[in-house]
Image (cartoon, rainbow, N blue to C red; front, top):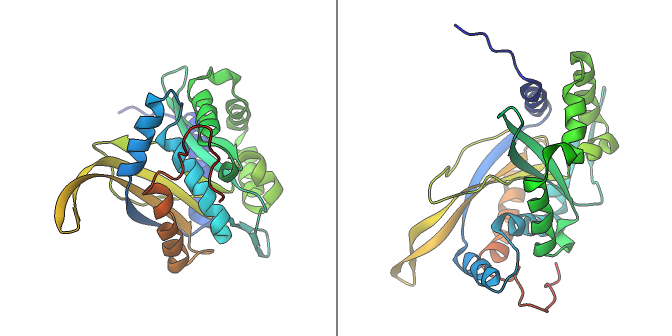
Length: 267
């Protein structure tokens, strides 16, 4: 039998998830979107030399959704004797990025993408690419969380308390909503449940070809599974359902990829 101590990375993940379990009521729903037109538009744009990707489009689309449904962008904070519902008056996406650390350990870290609803997909894609390819030690997020991971246990608990009780402190490290970048193609998860410290978060599942009935005919379409994680202390089922319905025109058309030298549609 081997006794393997938690690494500093796993201790941080433990504290983060434990806070989500204790102070939020995470519920998960799975929705599917026909992204055939969107994927074709991505391929066409890349053939024209444009640098874009599906994850960047998901960041853009979910940011626009937060702008359209501001309650999805709020957060519940817990102080000693009261609860707070906070409207941040801004939109920032916590994109969870997976990298391999120097010791070969998988490291998840949050990247804050500010105001994604008002940025171009190319701009978002370039920032994501930077965080996925730059030397880990040069990234401010990694530097900040490495300092946190070196904290003694009592300081880690203090960090968790501040993150759940102080909105300004929270925004120094986390965004107003969350999105995972771990999209898989052809094979992968089609559902599941998760914990989150945000009012809402999104987890892409698998993107794959599937048969679908359109106008009475069976056709092959590219279908994307997308999980939404919502804090039930803040959001009810109809809040989430309406929002996920409004995500359809953003993901099931090519409107987020305008032709070259044209302006983005107003959000």
